[in-house]
Image (cartoon, rainbow, N blue to C red; front, side):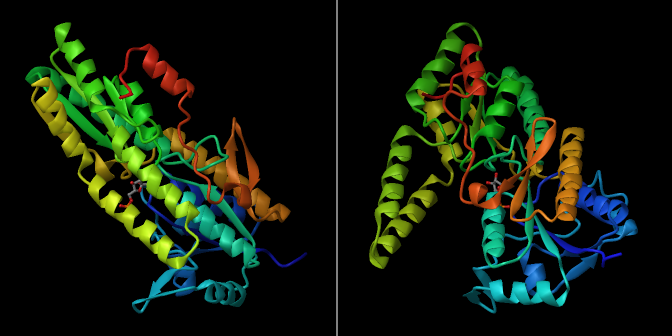
Length: 375
Ligand code: F6P
């Protein structure tokens, strides 16, 4: 009999419900089904750099299926750009050395878009890497969905539901800010499921006059309240245009000076965008003469116990991940595909983002039921 495989596992990027279910799915299958050895690294890629570990065995994997967050801890550290003693350093070599020293046969990285990129970098450096897609934003490319999204969708939908009675009682506009800087899946999903009157997502720049007109039309019909679900990254047509110009400039920049200039212009625009939801609520109040309030859902959307749908998704992706390690398939993300799973090459996923296409069926359904999308 050959030596049993030894695998490492880490969770990186923002936490999301279902991470522990995924750790358990990988761990129980790897340990119990294949007889592998598994160790967890604490706090994302930093854990393997600093060799901070958590032994994952039957007892550490027990009772975590329903627990929110990640028992391993997480961070937004990147292997090739990590802050060490106040300096940004490329820690790829250290990761390689620790991987070798610990006798790892594979490293499993659980994360969103940024993690897929970091994982790809480590795969290119020669490590056996396999990833799972997690994020409440649901914006990882080439997977049907990501775990965390279903739970966040439940939470955001419940919030939109609950805002109705208070908005109705006070004849107010309530603007509910939902997470998602670049992708509007969560806002769109919760907005449709919760019956928001206006849904604003980053993919569809809005015109505040048109939103006000839609709200006034409701008032004209005797409905003196409105719920506006707005994604963190939603922006007006003018702001979207300004971002586009600077992003094009950054893509075209060849010299270091031009790159730096475009980067700082982008940072200035991002800074200006902070507080956009509050500004939007004020503008709507002025234009409609309806009192407006803001509710920022924030981290509530990422916290707490995962929904059954996320537990199921994370468990089946985790189990499939251990199968692929057993078969020796690396350099892939385990994607959700229909009822099953599918390995997708990391180079196809890294650096891509799944955003809401303007003609997506969810967008069409929202329009058909009379929701204003701000355009
Ligand atoms: O990537 C998931 C996400 O939850 C985004 O929706 C949100 O904008 C961001 O993370 C917040 O991240 P942080 O935890 O770094 O504040």
